[in-house]
Length: 332
Image 1 (cartoon, rainbow, N blue to C red):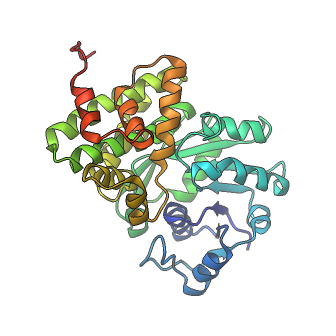
Image 2 (tube, one colour; image 1 turned 180 degrees about the vertical axis):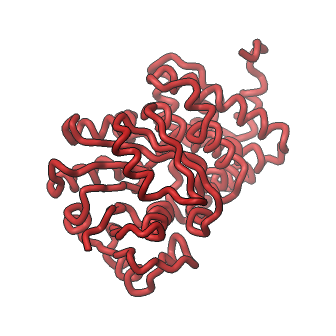
């Protein structure tokens, strides 16, 4: 049977999406670059490293062969870290056809030049290829458990976004459609940086008042950048904006928040990353967002201070003092 979808990226989120599609009755192929890891998934029928405790449905197949994964289905869903996104596109380009359609659940900017990932797709493929991005408040474990979840899928092709919705949507996994590809991507990338900031504040013991203020002002920073890049204001009040921001800033399932907590408690970045043991997208996103704010002349003080903590070893307490010591101003 031909797979209905091939998922590229066997981390926790890629695995959860593959399980979701397979549970909905779609024959699904999950690819990962590490042959030893994929052999383990195939033999154990479980991703014990990144998403333990969830057995794979029978119609979920495993492969470490990228050519097989791409040629097996015209619908590709990419869920690799943002730093590996362009390289993955370059590799699959050799195996695609004029029927290939590409969606991605990767969150972040391209680390080489700070552009959005849809621009990387356009640079790699022709403009005729159908594309879409999935983003929103989702933790992989809760999706795999079957807990109620809602996300956004953005595409300029309604037929394609409906096609992906049909594959993933069910009575506990709700998908909202959008045409704002830029806004959905900006929300998904920048919220990771703010989750680090929220974790730092909680690690310093500053409490709920501080966290609430940080989320609120952080949303304003997302909107300033997103609108400047061409996103729509209402997108940032939805699942891919405010929804995702609240999720990652308030729950310790967020790797970005856990990094911030560790930094606030006095640990260094290297120790914290070793303890987390998985990709923390907010680190690279902090640099890329900060550089974009400078390029476009946008005021993003929380992003700036988080960047300085991560890249210039600024003491987190000094960063907070810098934020509180800013000149008073009107809220809007």
